[in-house]
Length: 112
Length: 114
Image (cartoon, each protein chain N blue to C red):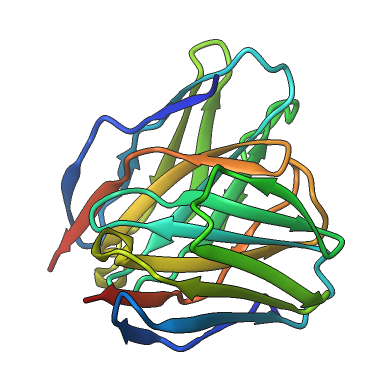
């Protein structure tokens, strides 16, 4: 069975600073995908970044990067230069076939 | 364009009502999904449609009935719901079924069952 763990229920970061959101996973499958989504209070799940289990390089998308450490089974999200609009819930998710399993989420609050 | 639309945005219904949630995408995606999200919890998968056929039903009670009339539309028919069914219902789509495919979500329907 797959399991995704986000150990930080809530975090504060100062505007313009970088922040790392932790995600660890457990799976016996050799092939899987890892995703990060942002969910503002409006409810929509916004796709941020994807990492495949066979990808050699860490994924990057603008201010978002994924620190993928396969041996440690971790896929941490790094947000550089935090903005007030980054305040939201962030979910790490892992795919197996069609199915996405989500972690419990981390609420990020950016302080001005 | 990665837009998935959902209607209505909010819905209040009694336990004896019948209502439907609608989801639409025009990205040519061939897999569509329904998720249920309770407050302060992650989304939980309910149903998956692949090429307009139901491929996964996560043991959802029969008071929830999904329908995929065509490749762009996904409905969720609701009947005789319970107050504990109150939640945010999210629709998603992906280009094809498969674990390398990114799922794009709609804004959700907030459902309150009285």
